[in-house]
Length: 123
Image (cartoon, rainbow, N blue to C red):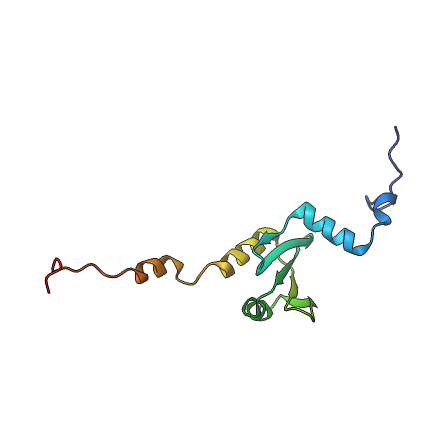
């Protein structure tokens, strides 16, 4: 059985051309996979380009302060911002992990525990 003819310079066949832009965008995310939490996630948009989606004003502020990131979409009804940056997916994942990790997370457990008494409980 013959495969459908391919256009010169590309690999998109006629079946993919009929899809809407929204379907193509979700197809990209499904193939490449999104990484992160509902507050902050990233996915590969194009080769060498990743997008970051956030529902948190704090993460949006951090992303807006990055020199390579630019705001490409936002929502009016609920807080949602999408930023785009020329960054490799593995670096984007590290960035999301760093942003999601609590500051001084390793020390917060120790600080919340009461200190042991050196006197053995004598008062």
